[in-house]
Amino acid sequence: MSNLEIWLVIIGLTLITILMRSSFLMLGDYFPLPERVQHGLRYAPVCALIALVTPELFLTQGTFDLSIANPKLVAGLAAAVITLTMRSMIAAMAIGMLVFTFLRA
Amino acid sequence: MKALFGSRPELARVRREGFTRGIRAVAPLLIGTGIWGLVTGVAMVKVGLSTAQAIGMTLLVFSGTVQLASLPLIAANAPLWVVMLTAMVVNLRFVIFSAGLHSFFRRFSLGRRWLLSYFMVDTSFAMFLSRFADAPRDERGTTEQVWFFLGMSAGTWFVWQTMSIVGIVLAAEVPARWGLEFTAILALIAMTLPMISGKPALIGAVTSGVIAVVAAGLPLKLGLLVAVVAGIAAAMSAEIMLERHAANTGGTS
Image (cartoon, rainbow over the protein chains, first blue to last red):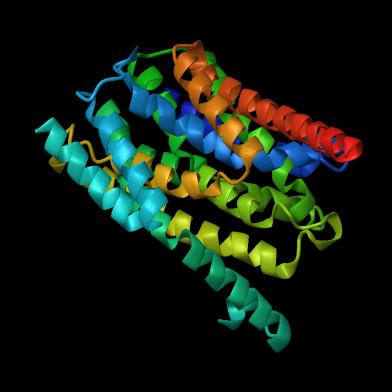
């Protein structure tokens, strides 16, 4: 892409992102959501975050990889166990990263 | 401090407390945010953006997923409309987030809301709503809540931008595959699991997680959106079924 095209992309991405981030903040006054949907939105955080995580853990270069030879999966499980037992984010990240680095070596 | 929190002592105290709580709440996540920002900074330069373009992109767009999704397309010389369409699909979850935050920010002018929405990122949204989702309608949008959001946003924005710019400047020195970006995923795991409380949330999380893997091959990264919508729907259905079940067993005894 030329310099000008890249700047156009950047401006386009900026506009699209801000418009979509602000979409319901702006229009919500005119389109009130049903109570059920309002209530259901409380599940959006967990669902969105989990959906960002699982493809990283279970896919290796786009293919399903459920084996102990998959460093990301094993490290992710280690971090999950640490999170649930020790309730420490720092410990989960440190141990997860140790496992990941060790298994990749 | 007056410039930030205003000169009315009582109001300034509430604002400052909310802001500080927001920063404290988001602090453990900032390691992941920083490394993710660094990786994104490096990636922008490696794809061929100039220093000015990369800094412009990180300051203006301020969204790791959108930036990272667009980079391969820029590298492949994809037509402008393909890049925009991809960005729109990746961003669709922001529409859902936006709906979740509306009742908290509705008292502000459209200009203010627009400004607040610039700071809407996955981690801040998730942390905010999981903390305040139980607030009844008339207790939404308090000064404390809004400044909590601002505190989280300020911390996230500052760390993300600083580390992105470090990545942009040092791009040549950072080896392509350190695997550092994985720390961001670990941070998300550590953040998300404690949020899963109750059966509907668990069912939603499992559904969303499975669908995200199965649908990962969909074009334009549509899999993420499909997973989120399916997860929310599953959690809501589970909730309705559990309510009915409780009503039935309660009624027959």
